Length: 383
Image 1 (tube, rainbow, N blue to C red):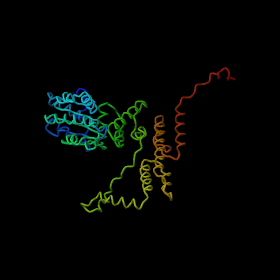
Image 2: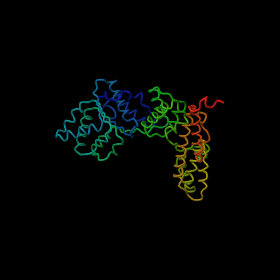
Image 3: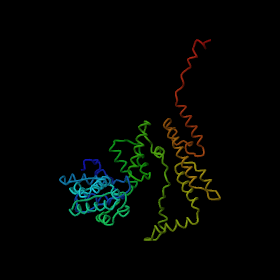
Image 4: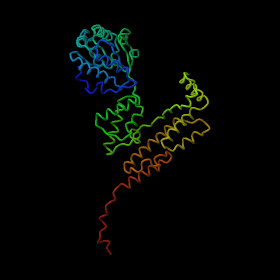
């Protein structure tokens, strides 16, 4: 039954991008004509990438277009449990009864259906009954069929016999669109540039993205003021990785038309790596990134001049930790005195004590003056 599924999980609330366009097109085709196209439809992808949203949208669409069709949605764990009970009772045919009486069967997280050969045999019988009767089957998994362990080859052939599509991680445009949808749905409000800054962070799935938005929302409610775009990373406690520079047009100009551009870049990169020590390249990239954000990079520049190889990753981890600490100090100071935003004391990792002292002075200045001591009365001091 679709009643147990969230009715907000529909096609018109599903953000479409390069990483899921094929899966969405296939899902729409199945929803418009169950049993006629892509049967079975197998959708796979990592956790939190929208597989459940997509199959729920199929179910809701079918109920709208063809309300007479019988729709059933189950999880792989539920089916596995029913399979075990049916096999253990010596009546495996009991499994077929509740599932065979459907026109559209959706099985979520079918990676849980692997295990005993007898269980897989009964599952294969169920698939044969459904597909033989023209009933639509939609399955989701966290991996493609060939990567699910201990699967019988005949069952694997059935699972892969229709269309297998994947749902990948969202790119920047998708992340931004998802954030805007959530903000509009919840009637939230953020300062200009905040959502763009969150979308730039490389979250691997939609759950992490929404979790970051929840954290910003809670911070605003507790702090009583909007979060600024330049505070997003500090509030979320993340450090931006150096971004790849755009390709200069003058480099493209020297490459003949039709040449293997990607191969050319690979050759250049290999040549550079053979002539320049990797740890120097790593520190140099970090210097460019941090300097562009206004940070004092003196300690990194001095490390770059070292005659012998150093632990570049350890140095950069320590530097990133110092940056995060200074960002946290700045957030606290700006909450009391907004004029301290961008103060140089919060941009120098070699002068953290000065930044901490500035924060303490700011806090002290904001405290109310103590009341007069009751021991000092007018009568006692008047001359």
